[in-house]
Image (cartoon, rainbow, N blue to C red):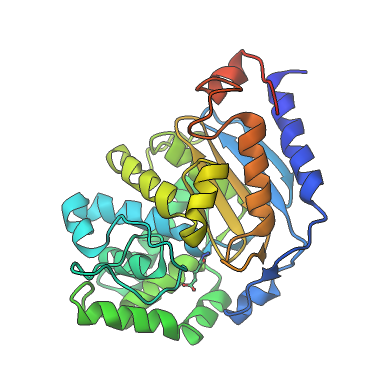
Length: 328
Ligand code: DON
């Protein structure tokens, strides 16, 4: 069996293994999200040399939700540089829930760009003069990372805005401390729109692979992200991407990652590949149950943990080209 078909088989086996898991609940705090089909389950793995492996509902659209946050952070860094961006958002894990109403003591910055407070601060930085200008430039960037044309789900966006009072409270708290400017509704429109972008697991895997590939889309070869800041984005994903599950994730999976309440999870294997799993049933912390299970297995079977020594040495891609895989 070639190494490529071995990977195909591993992805398919993990899909079969967890297909019937029904633990967790679809998010309903944004009513429109409650309409997701709880049984949908898709896995996609995209390598930096353009191979794509899928299983299940990898072409099913759902909203990106919090997985927009690392990409928006990357855009803020590209537009404003490190020094200015870090005046508005920290890089410290909060260990708290994604929607916690809290800021760093002394600096009064949000802890990091992966929690809602930080993502709202970032939205304030990347919004443009017109409301649609900033949203369009976010969509344009994400399209280049996915390698196809994308759109926002207007019903989810309206539902976010209608039920978004906690985010409004966070935004006003940050206005009070001078972290964001006075255009609060404009900033929230940017944030809600970003969360409402429709993507598939395949899109997310390609976006993750673009980060893995130093900012270059592995298929279109488009230089999407400025590689000088990809390191920043991956670092914050590694320490903060799964909120109050970030330590467990780092221990078991060992990869920079981000989850969203739409049911998506992405993980990045630096210089090698992007992983995405979609399954809308969430655990109590708002992370996809089957997303976590499948990611753990992929990391373990393919030796992807950042500190893994056993299976394929330091390079999955090298093995894919030539070596032997000793799966666990
Ligand atoms: O701010 C919110 O409530 C959502 N639009 C995004 C939250 C989210 O995806 C949290 N992630 N697990």
